[in-house]
Every structure is written in C-alpha cells, then in structure tokens.
Length: 117
Image (cartoon, rainbow, N blue to C red):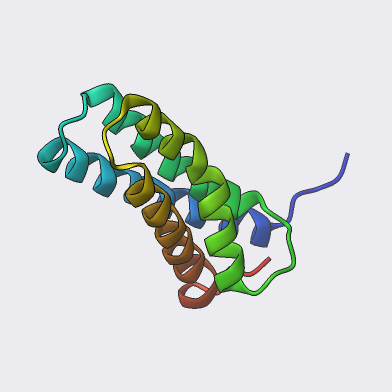
C-alpha cells in the first residue's frame, strides 16, 4: 500500500476547510436573501464543500487559477442544475459563483498557504 505524503494531506485539509467555509457563506446568503428552501441552501453549501475536497484531492497539473475555475465549474454544475430544475432563476449565478469559489479556494490553498500539488 502506498503511503500518503504530509503535503498531500495538508493540501486536502486546507482545501476542504476553505470549501466548508465557502459553503457556510453560501448557505447563510441563500437563507437570508433567496426564496429557496433550507434543503436547497444546504445542498448548495455542501456543493461548495465538495469543490474544496475535489480541489484538495485533484492531481491535475494546471496553473492554479485554471485549476480553481475548472474544478469549481465542474463540481458546481449539480447545484446549478438543481436550481434550474426548481425554476428559481439563480442557476447561472450559482455556476458563476461556483467557479469563483473554486478560484478562491485554490488561491488560498496554493498561493497563500503554499500547499501545492
């Protein structure tokens, strides 16, 4: 069995924590300003957590900003489709914010804290 490096675990931890923080921010904003239910807000918050986890575990060799935008867009797609299905009108905004949060999570993880892939 292959050993996991401390750098990988640090990156995974940081990105997941930043994803959880982004999810909490999104959840609080949706509950306060949008007309969606609490389950929808929780699923979007969980989606941001998933973006952080995916960024932390990813091994793609891309520039940090491309990686953040790409991972945010890919893993933010389920939340955007959920909002589109509900007909709330926030699906495009959710997709843009998913990419933005992916960029921020990757920036904080890679550039600020130096936990590179």
